Image (tube, rainbow, N blue to C red):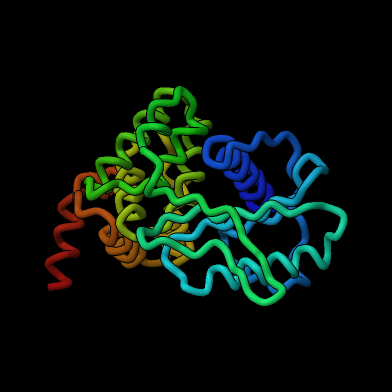
Length: 267
């Protein structure tokens, strides 16, 4: 239950930040609307919310080109409107792809459009130059223009770290993970999370990769029930997103020689 509350609160902050710095909408009160009876697919980026009891915001975070996007958005509009006739609906797609999406549709008896924000047209420095982590965190959505993803992630994390305390920094790391859409950037974020020394590793979102496999529990129980096997699973899981043996040794509190022994056994 606590995790659900935290996640919902973080998503609210993400929506407010995107609205302020990308959509240029100021939001005070945000109330998520129930969409279970609608046909909207259950995807993380879909947001349908009542804003300041004045209008409904429908926000899509779209990472790749979809030739059917205009039809999806029209269908979303009719589904939302059918259930919420009282309020006007503002539809936005924050698009991370390079090939332009179609954002309007004109047909017999139909004249429809949604607001399209193409991140490729927004300079990443616009976010990085702000003196607030709420804006800086959105730089993760930028088109990096061929620059090294890990380096950009490092710049983002460094800037956020200087502006927050430990709890705040952890919160923005979670927000980054919610916003990341490409595997390359995800890998870069995981690598930097592994290198954090002043934030508990087990508190970070990527720790669920280990936790969901039962490895963390296996380590705790391993004192009596085969600690070597549990640690072996943990080592190989962590090797999926870092090859730094010294770092793994430190995070799992084991000797580097033990890791080398496991690698030899695998060969």
